[in-house]
Image (cartoon, rainbow, N blue to C red; front, top):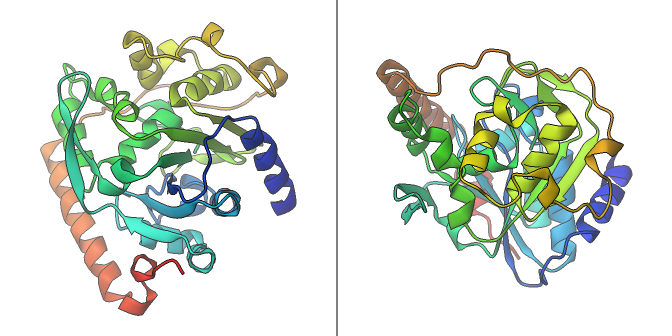
Length: 309
């Protein structure tokens, strides 16, 4: 698969007008939700490595990071099985521990990872069904830029019937550095999610400098109407650029060039709001997982402590 994937990436990325990457600090932001079922629930390892190599070949300084639901980015990457290859390439692994408060356009605020705020280019990677959002693509992946317990806290604080959870999520790309969204749709997740869905052989790679635009296109390809998708509906209510198909242009293939059938999204969505019990359970579990990870990982094995040559 690797030669074909490299060729596909070169073709797709060649159609994107990117500024020079030489000496640019580029952060890969895959979906590293958890070590459980990581080969399906997370961005595919081969895809991450291929993107990293492409960027390095163009002179970029590449790091990778996320704020998983449980554990650390380093822990989840080990479960995917690509840690050694990333370290060999000189890619630093960042655990999103430090954050800064940023004012969102809607007037609220978010504490986002310093690594995401300080990079020159943020590369956003993933495609899957979701039990709370029906479908999560590029825009939702920015939610992982919130650090640690800020994520479940947003669910609890903003996820009620009168909450504005999705309205806040769609504002996150607006306060982050320029981003390139690359959707890893080689093997997508459908039926359920975000962890325990089923594999779907979508065999698709898409790219855009506008995460809303790429989400719009994927909703068309997968046959999910914007009204069914809380995130896409929030993008439209906010009037975000790229939320309407006629606004978009396609240098390579168009949505109608794809024939996708049998991709299933959840019919009934779970509540977005976390109960107080679930919030505390999540907090305790996160602390225990991180403690266990630290105890079983000698300092010399932690890739975030290694420096790029």
